[in-house]
Amino acid sequence: MSALIIFTLLIVLMLTGMPISISLGLTVLTFLFTMTDVPITSVALKLFTGIEKFEIMAIPFFILAGNFLTHGGVARRMIRFATSMVGHWHGGLGLAGVLACALFAAVSGSSPATVVAIGSILLPAMIKQGFPPRFGAGVITTSGALGILIPPSIVMVMYSVATNTSVGQLFMAGVIPGLLLATLLGVTTWWRARKFGYPRLAKASASQRLHALRESIWGLLLIVVVIGGIYTGIFTPTEAAAMSAVYAFFVAVFVYKDMKLSQVPKVLLDSANMSAMLLYIITNAVLFSFLMTSEQIPQNMAEWMLNQGMGPIAFLLVVNVLLLLAGNVMEPSSIVLIMAPILFPMAMHLGIDPVHFGILIVVNMEVGMCHPPVGLNLYVASGITKMGITELTKAVWPWLLTMLCFLVLITYVPAISLWLPRTLGMMS
Image (cartoon, rainbow, N blue to C red):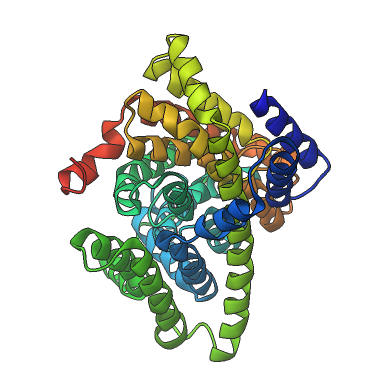
């Protein structure tokens, strides 16, 4: 009964157009002060202790690093390098877009940032070369979603905060799924380009490829700084985030010199605004999680599912359907912070690995970012392409189907996610 009241209240508030973060906070406070005897002091205490986690500090740093790289010409150099490597295959610029998105994802940690950085440069070039606008939009919108799967990933940090799972293990677990999804999106792009006879570029010479690599090497080295630093134990994921922000600033301002020192305050302010918004959502989601736990809702749901004889296979199917439905009305950060604390205890009851479960949730968030009505990547791509959401939805379907097939693979083959962290000795 408590769960019904809480979720009805939350949905009603969201339907009024109220931001999700405020809807969460109001739901919690209304229920706590009218239907429970929980003292106000414990609510205030939970508000502060809930976000007193070292991992949360990684979020503003990764956002700052991503903003420096987006404004600092790193994306343009990565596109040049990707084009030199795969531009001569069918749909050359489209394949270069997938590769460039994968590379930029590995340094930015954000899907919308990847779509903006790569799409704003590559889409006009694709249209100029003769690609249909829909093809280019479909490639960039879906490939941009790699930003939250290939580490570092802000969504993985949020899952870690919500469930106390190791960020380092999650980052390493995201490497192979990220590369696999990039490959599958590339194959879809190549197949459609070959089928419809889309243009391809002349093959780049070895010296051209070397020159493109030399130009983009400073941006690519950030991948080594973050992943290498975490794996070797030189620094924690949060320290890696701080290092990446300093490194991105140094590269953008002093190495590539695409950003003037006078532009740095604006980048800092934009990053602070985005960080504040996410931290506000996290704070209210922590309160919501506290309410769920105090009312024993996750535990009761887990018990009910087990009593129905639901095993891991059926449970994971239900989770995928729930998360894909949630992706219709909420953005990834809110979904992870609301759903993970509810679903996580059930997953643990059924013996599902927490890291595998985290990657499964992240892949669901990727799919959610590419379909209407609130797919963030669709809106970002719409701003770049000047195409309507309906037209963009039609454009992304071939790649979206590929992502759904990939989701099934990740759900039922845990080894794809867990092999690398286990091989590196990060998991037993």
